[in-house]
Image 1 (tube, rainbow over the protein chains, first blue to last red):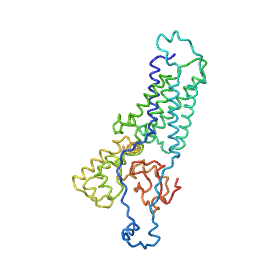
Image 2: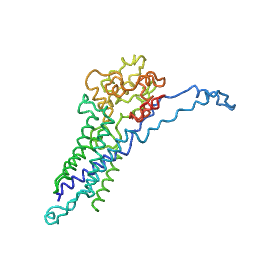
Image 3: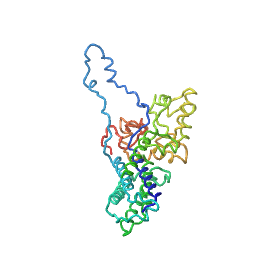
Image 4: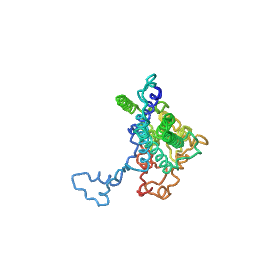
Length: 208
Length: 185
């Protein structure tokens, strides 16, 4: 049975992770239009030809249509890592919310009937998925962004912090899952898993 | 079960409230903000945008540290601003200088501005954005033919020639479109 403070801590952690994941909401500062005014010879030609008479211009001038707007791809190596990070945080939040033990507070714990230990329930499945997704995300990040990691920039560099916190967070989650899965009796593993989740959330925030 | 639904509802409310918060530049505002701050802060000052943008892309102040803006934006330096005379009246110069210094890299929580601040913290003030260690490093793998040899780019200083969202302060690699080299990466 878990004490009341542990349950509150878990809810707070779940909230933090979901809030971090909410960064999906994309909001940019209202930027001024900084583009340079573009005037081409073709546009001048059209101005000169803007009268009632049909413009009799060579095809090389009239066909100078503007270049198509560049549309960033929805699915790139950049945003794959981002989606994996959000998926990890969502799974962490799910695992925290589905953790057994709610409702047992104070003296009630002593008299409450002991529940059989679930090693394959929703919480366990979500926790394993979160740890696995965290490992995949870290691996993908290391492979894709290795060139952004430079120790010469020190610990205050946001990318360096992101790598370190993300790796530590994933390791802590995997340790917590492993600790619980390999024990025949319930063991305390929530603290380390929650810390891992927080480390992951902070890592996301640092480079968001 | 009801408790969990209540918790989920509370978190959803917090999420909506948090996303409504406008991103600021203080630590607490940054921490509580969910606004995307991966690039540099876009230019929001009309005078700065007008004065600088008349001749070139109005580089965001977060692209250089304050010590660089101090060296670049003074009456003497503007007489020879990279080969051109860019003098302006005293009041305008003060406004432009103050905006640049107050929003310089080290004052910003935007990620790329922070990286520039870290990479320029020591050593002399760089006078060109392309001289900063971070900017030089992230462009070092790009062949010269795509920049200097590219008639639609010509120089690394033409940020917005390839960074399609440079004006918004977004410099992610997936928003890069090098003219004449669509498959550059």
